[in-house]
Structures are given as C-alpha cells and as structure tokens.
Amino acid sequence: MKTTYKILTFKDIDVVVAMMVAFYAIDHYPIDPVAAKRLLEEFTANKNLGKAWLIVADKQMVGYVLLTFVFSFEYGGTVAFIDELYLSEGARGKGIGKQTLDFLKSESDLLRLKLLYLEVESHNKKAENLYLSAGFEMHHRQLMRYKIPASNNKKSNKN
Image (tube, rainbow, N blue to C red; front, side, top):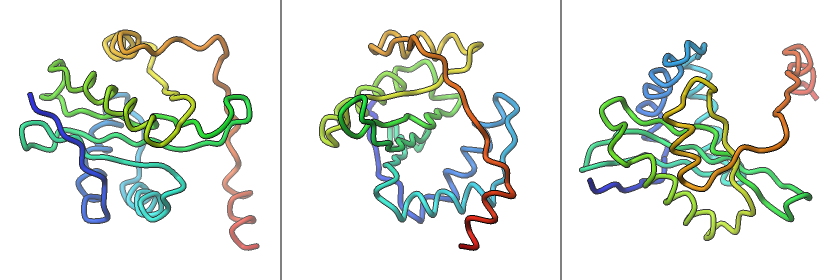
C-alpha cells in the first residue's frame, strides 16, 4: 500500500476535526469540535508549534499525525511529541502506522529533533507493540500533569 504524507493546511482543518471526533470517541474522550478547529487554526498558523500531516494511502485520506515541539535542555535542543496519530479503522493493521513512524523519524532528522515522545493508552496493546517494534521504549519516568485552572487562563489572556 503506497502511503504519502501531505502537510496540513487551513483547507484541511474541517476534515481533520471530523477525524479527531472519531479518534477521541475510541476512548470516550470529550472533544469540542469548535475548540479543536480553533486550535488547529492556531497550530497551522504558527510553524514554531510543530508540524501536521494528513496520511494518504492509495490516494485516500486515512488519518493524520500531529507533531508538537518542545525545547529541552536535558536533550540538547528541540524534542517533539507525537501528540496525535490517528488512522481510520479500515486503515489499521496494514502497515500504515509503521510507515508513518518511519516517516516521522526521517522528518525528525530533517528538523534536527533530539527525541520523539508519545503516549499510548495502557489498554491499547496493538499500538504499544507497534511503537516498541519501531524502536520506541518505555520511559523510566512517569508522566505527570498539572491542569491550569480555566480562571488563570482567562486572567493571562487579558494582560
């Protein structure tokens, strides 16, 4: 199966939002399509935030991948987070995920990235096995988060 990658543009945003809704539904995550569209517009407009591609297999759009950038002193430069990698149900299990990871590795060289991070749901053993077979490894640290209260975001937007 011939797989190609097309840089996400503003005209593709509605299609990607529809795929995001399907992606989030897999694990019953909430999604606001209007907010997702606004975020994709912001992301697409600012090349410093990362890169995004549509995944096309046999001339059919079958998914998307979002790579977000972070600067890391520990790793000596820019690292990226594979924030989202989605393949439609019919495209799974056909080697497209592996091809996409290989594509991201080659793009990482061009972008001079130092490291790729990603998250995988603990119940998604197929995805975990795909990532492990592609050379990713479990990190010895645990991922933690602090969610900034919405009231703080509103205050900072006014300044």
